Length: 181
Image 1 (cartoon, rainbow, N blue to C red):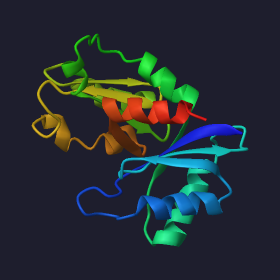
Image 2: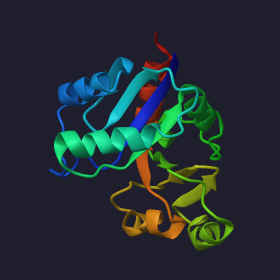
Image 3: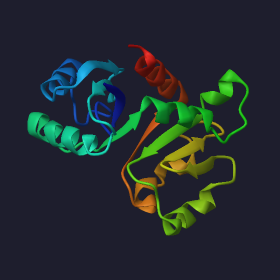
Image 4: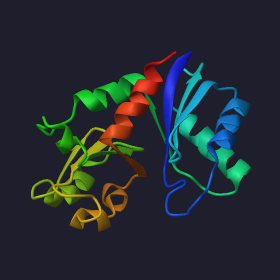
């Protein structure tokens, strides 16, 4: 069995797309996934599957969510090893615990094209900074996400792919949860 993490976009946030975690876990069980665990209410699901890769799992899960709950939810899949690589690949030289509270990682459904990356270049430097590495976009907010001009930028449109963001703390907790048998 291989361990995967499903990152659901936009559920249980701002009153939109409400899904109870118990119901979500049950749905994953119906899909024959094992050892299903969730972290907080915002759509972080760790599960085991016999699938040799995460390829195709996002579509299966998204379709079942549509059938079960009646609305569309983009799903992005990563393996434990991929999450560990994201943590190790942080491009920002942060050392203080307080600094990490300003760091977010957006998980992209697909690797963006060179043309899409060019559209993001203007956001790389400044008080708030963005770095796209493979299928992840790291964003460091100098003050806070809600006070940043980047908060209103539709990076999914610029990059041409679905994405879902997690703060650094959540990323660490989900990775730790995924490492547990």
